[in-house]
Amino acid sequence: MEDVRESQGRGERAAMKGRPDPGTGSFSLASRARSFQHAGRGVAVLLSGQPNTWIHAAATVAVVALGLYLEVSSLDWCALILAITAVWVAECLNTAIEVLADAISSDWDPLIGRAKDIAAGGVLIAAIGAVAIGLGVLGPPLLRLF
Image 1 (tube, rainbow, N blue to C red):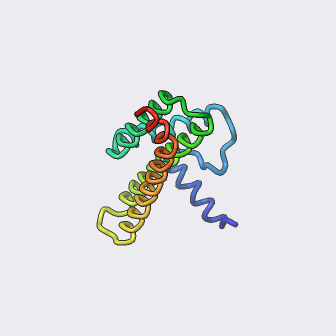
Image 2: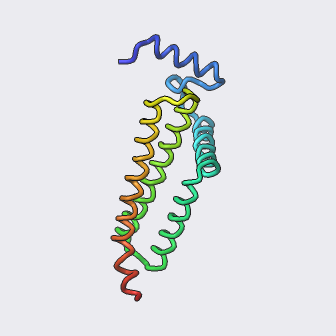
Image 3: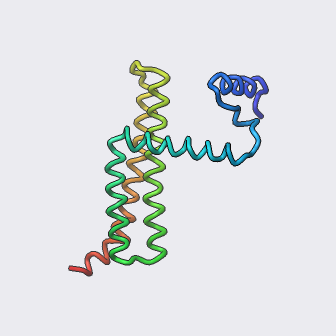
């Protein structure tokens, strides 16, 4: 159970930043719309500030184009979409960890370096899995073309 002092401190910090405490707000369409705006801004920051996202974007476009051209099955689309999504989510989390780590300290810290390496490793694992799924789904129909 969360300590009341921690909860109050979180609310005070949120208020100081001009944002409502996420634990006390009521549901409204306006607040949901703001949440989507924040999420959209996060995606825009990711796309504009991270060179690796352009690689992910190019791979995404290529896989979707090939899937459409090869007319893959619904089940294959599910696998491709899941793989693509896993890579994008991993990249988002990696970038968020990097930004937070840089905000904590601009000096080299071995623990922050480890955290960044682990987060980047998560992206690598997701990308390798996505390549394996892509080859498994798209490889056989591509080979039949030749």
